[in-house]
Image (cartoon, rainbow, N blue to C red; front, side):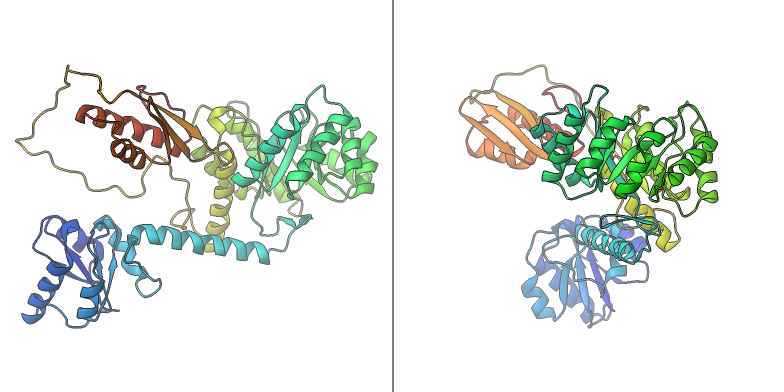
Length: 497
């Protein structure tokens, strides 16, 4: 395929390094590539073709992703498709590889278009792998093991003590974030009626498997009466009392070692569960927190999986994320990779503390990354999906400071805008854990919007801002509010972000 890339003088070297021999380059007489117009492109092409420096036959032309002109008429005159390339020249390196494989756009920059294309391709592959997996165990329609994706179990802490409306909202939000299984945590003072009420509430608002989280045989008994999918957990303290009942119901059971004991205890408890007739056993060797023997617990998982490769494994990632002051995205990604290596099938998280919010989505994405990496026999990178939040995969070009640049200084002058003051707040989308609305209060109006630009435009259009200083201040604060929503952070006007 013959490809031509149009650019300006400033980006010429970057473009040449990015495309190398994969495309021809047309440098148009403008410094900034984004200022290329349809007429400039046509004039430059005709001049270079007339001088013999450019081919007369191209299958497609990429113009910079930030150009604002309409190139449709020029494309007809040139007899060649003209599409938006990426916003940044260095992205041309991988953009040109997709030429002829995807339909580029005249309105969406190629870098943004391919993010969605690559993501859709990745998710389609995940679904095909899931469909073809030969599961070790089925929980309803859900597959565990046998090449299936690791499933995310999200615990609703103290579910038995929550109002039905609050519990319903929590469950719906967890499923929206990506939970494959809902685990109902039973409080210490829970009654069988509380368990029944929680399970019935969960069944009304979800179709995913439901587990009950308690060691109390009385509570487990009621959960089995109502029809729970998984009991969590069994050990020597309750197998004799509830094991036969679990076996008769055909319910899957998570078996754990006795408190403070090791893998030998887990093996003995599994034997006791199987002796009671429980055939659907999920083993939990217990992941210890960092600083409390985590290395030994990972070895425990590895050894258990080698000894019992056909038994599904439960992996409590939340034991780590809840007990470390670090951003959860990287922690969840790393431990999801460890879980994959030791053969885990269920990733458990309560998403309880503020710092661990988002863990359900992060583990779901990480589980998809790991299954793709395994399919491609590669590291979990360049997959089409990722968990990059603050760090960049590719750094944009930095500017060189000219010798005559003027150093800034803070102005001591400030005056109240005659049009009035503005209070900025945010209203996050609690159901998904991402996004939401920016809320702006003025004496004459209350405005909501999803991004800083639209809110500021509305304020200006309504003449609620009348000074440059105030407009600049509001732009800064509104962008901080937008970023707070994007990164699921709190926001307070005038505070540092």
